[in-house]
Image 1: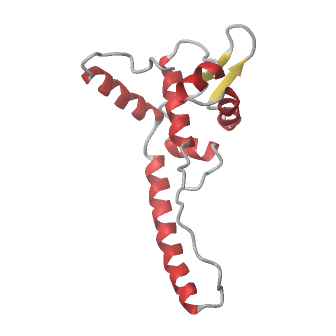
Image 2: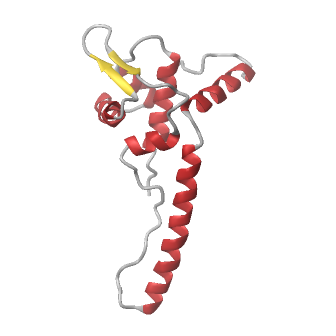
Image 3: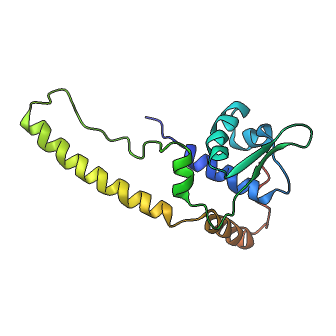
Length: 152
């Protein structure tokens, strides 16, 4: 089963955008994420709707940040993506009248609900500014002190 990497990918894109002066085209972001520009535009639409990014058309246009990195959290970005599934685990539903299946599903539902609440609370505690600061700490310690943004 493949993993849903949209949250990781869009956070990656947002941090690259924070390192650039001026707008960044969908094509440049797509190359950085090894995907298609249409995928970038579709993904950015939810972020634009929430006011986290803006787009400018024409020569010199592209995507740019429209938010303060200190106020936007991983949870905010997760919400803007439409709340993708956090866990691949699901309940069996082949025999809904089976008391064993009911007991198993109730236990799994409770555990998954608790895990999701904990994860979402953790997302709310991490800002884009904190991710950017971590990137800059890593960059400072990196032997070559490259920008770390050479692929965007």
